Length: 187
Image 1: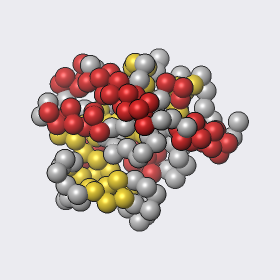
Image 2: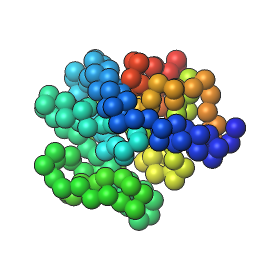
Image 3: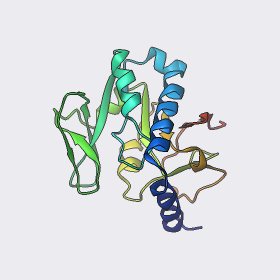
Image 4: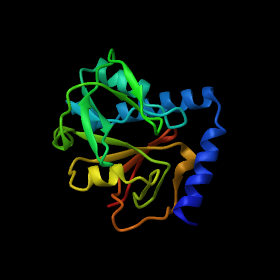
């Protein structure tokens, strides 16, 4: 199956989920991430602000803040790269033309990811080898190319697949969290 066809199928399944299903999934994902020993020691985590049909990150980010963990979130730039800002739960959000919520704030630069204990990324699917199927714009593959921190994708349970199409430039993740639990990619 091609990347484009798999994206279309996965996006259609996401659109078919009800708000209560999404909310329940977001709460379960947050609990699984928060139970990770890596998070117990974390001082800073990178995470994305979820779009309406993505696995929700609101409960996770709120719980990280409650624990005193700094959260950095991405800002998309005109050159199709990402910058990062420190998340302030009280900051106003704007929505990009791609439908992505972004806060205002001082930009930290690409080096901000090197200060994170864990980098949580969006995905439409993750396979058992850690290949992540994104939306196709390449923002995250460029941002993650030189990151040494563990990478974790958040997906719905049906999006953890035996195999997804991938290319050499696609940056794999080391783990995925679904509402059903944590999946670690075998090394």
